[in-house]
Length: 131
Image 1 (cartoon, rainbow, N blue to C red):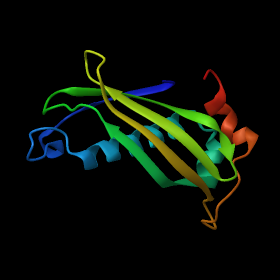
Image 2: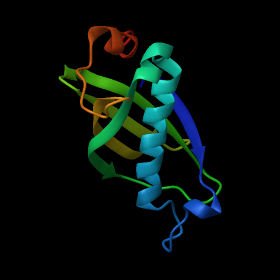
Image 3: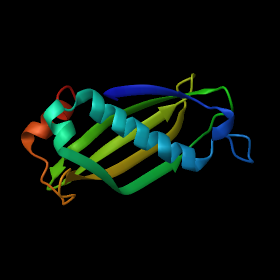
Image 4: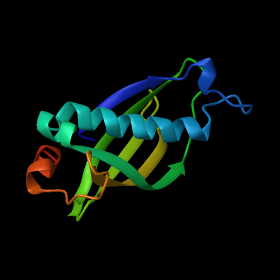
């Protein structure tokens, strides 16, 4: 995966089953996407557009408990389709076991009008390099 970030499970992330709640995984998927955008996008693009999730497809394959770490990786997959871009996210534990895999679809909106805007080659380029 092109962009990585780790998350440590705190007491606020744990559900009645004693492990990270599924809703927290969804938040971490969003946090990965946001951090990747902030790290890679051109400054003028970060000001001009915002992103909206239009679909999450998530496979839960494992879990972690309080104090354990999930290592996340993400990359943009495929090519943009109009205003939409797909993103893959994967979380693994310290041993490399896959915990969660997600495929998410995001729509790009003009920050001023909040209307869909086509993902241009210039906006996509930083995310396509090195895939």
